[in-house]
Amino acid sequence: MTREERKVIVASSLGTVFEWYDFYLYGSLATIIGAKFFGQYPEATRNIFALLAFAAGFLVRPFGALVFGRLGDLVGRKYTFLITIMIMGSSTFLVGVLPTSDQIGIAAAVILIALRLLQGLALGGEYGGAATYVAEHAPQGRRGFYTSWIQTTATMGLFLSLLVILFTQEAIGREAFADWGWRIPFLVSIVLLGISVWIRLQLQESPAFKKMKAEGTGSKAPLSEAFGQWKNAKIALIALLGLVAGQGVVWYTGQFYALFFLQSLLKVDSYTANLLIAWSLVIGTGGFVLFGWLSDKIGRKPIILAGCLIAAATYFPLFKGLTATANPALHQAQQSVQVLVSAHPENCSFQFNPTGTAQFTSACDIAKATLARLSVNYEQQEAPPGAVASVRVGDRVVQAFEASEISAQERRAETARFNRELGEAITAAGYPPAANPSVVKMSHPFDIFRGQPFSVIMILTLLVVYVTMVYGPIAAALVELFPTRIRYSAMSLPYHIGNGWFGGLLPATSFAIVAQTGNIYSGLWYPIVIALMTVVIGLIFVPETKDRDIFAEDMAEAPRERPASASI
Image (cartoon, rainbow, N blue to C red):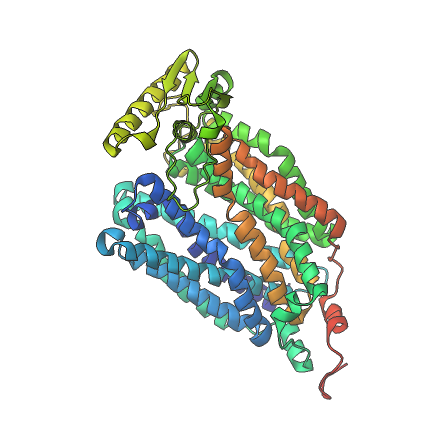
């Protein structure tokens, strides 16, 4: 690797790490942000709004891919991802100085969501530019290895955000952090932005793009050519369903859903959960480079599809092992305590509530939602029509209530009564109390060497290894599918639909499935089904690309008419 090639990789990767850092800060602090910017709503509703604001950044990523992909194919890779990092860094810094809902009311939430949308648009253009730029500098036969350094950036950005949060909490105390210190990680981004812009200003345009411009073979309408012509749109669709969709759900299951599972379902405190995830990232991140390098030897397709298949085959035992290790009392209770919800099916709804505004008032819905929040596995049995739903825990029956037929004051009283009686019943039957001494806990980072945290980290690290298998070679695979003239646009859209939509919506979708089925593991069916779909489509339709010469491919794809001065 030459000095110039190292400079390209370091500059592109470091800037992208900072950009992912900005993006994931919000996810790591979603609970605090929900309280600060959606404080006018009840706790359950504001948490949903906070998650939706987080999801908004994912939803607009494909649109950012279109806007900045087109710009990158027309004016160049370097200038486009200079723009994206300016937008991302500025938006993140502004979150750090934004007044809360206590100060400016609903305007705080509106401005926050607008900043999240800007972050998503910028990220939609960032990844394609960085991956394309590095790939177009890489020598033939080493493209997987070179682009794998870009693949480490999302994980390293998440790790950096967790590290800054944990360090700030330790420095000022957790109460001060929840009060005002949460702003510090956002404000730090202005320093990272300055470093990133300075680094990227040192770069030159990619050789492939300069060659294309010199020969006059660039596209005048890259979006129309990439997605309006079936020969290219077909490849983008195959890339989405046969590579990126599975990669996206494996990525988010191994990192974000694992964090959500620890905190929300296994009741691990946020400090410990973040440390556990951070250690697994430290141990497993080298896999990105390993599998990128290996893909230069044996191919991109077999590694990505193998990662999807192995993940789908092992998610259930791994997450059950995570429960048994991180919260053994909860695991034991789930095995031994039978909980039944008795209700007529017509009184039960599918409790998917993406806006947080729906009101579920039937006794069945109240009972199931409460059990889901308590991480209690349950089964449902049919009751006669008109019967009010009830919950049987062992020999004890707790009666639910119909909220639509009572006043608000009566509802609050009934909710308190039901929560108290149900909590007493499940605790008496064997479920752990709120102060559960068996749940994994870390007081400082080096508690990793104790048995229980170490065992949890090993399971999480295996999930990260799956992430590195599917993600390490993906940039090279996508770059090699498309010619230089439309590469930025064509690879960015399937990547961001696969990761932003299939992957980014995974936590919310999986939790809705958990609440519906009464089993904390049933949410895993979402990533398993998507990953298996990718394996089937990828095996049949995705070509192997590791031996493609992207310059030769460009010559084959270029239009016939060229300037007289162009070299043939």
